[in-house]
Length: 117
Image 1 (cartoon, rainbow, N blue to C red):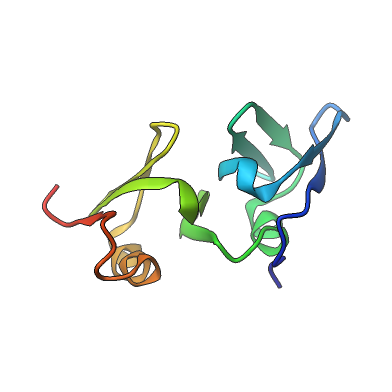
Image 2 (image 1 turned 30 degrees about the vertical axis):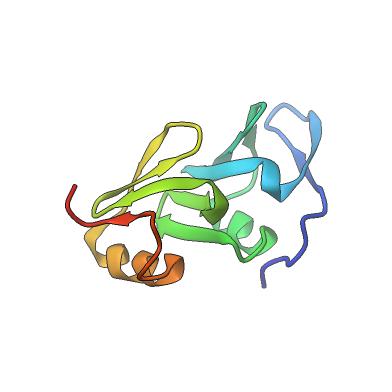
């Protein structure tokens, strides 16, 4: 079950350093085998949590767009058939089978969507 708050979440990186991160500071989370990379506004953290656990911990506005990516919907600046562009400029892949689902999540009339690119 996903969290429904923006309260800071405690994480420990691979080296034992502790962090408190607000979900709204996270652009996206990328799977790295049994670890995850948390890509934030101010820092990137390599944590000892699999992406499936991150999906349970983070609020519902995080969308699993790919087996390797969990994104914060509020940082999507553009959505194309095969990619989303995040506010930090990163382009992340969207598999064809997830395109329609993501389009519905963002809303048909959402200005993010563009099928022509």
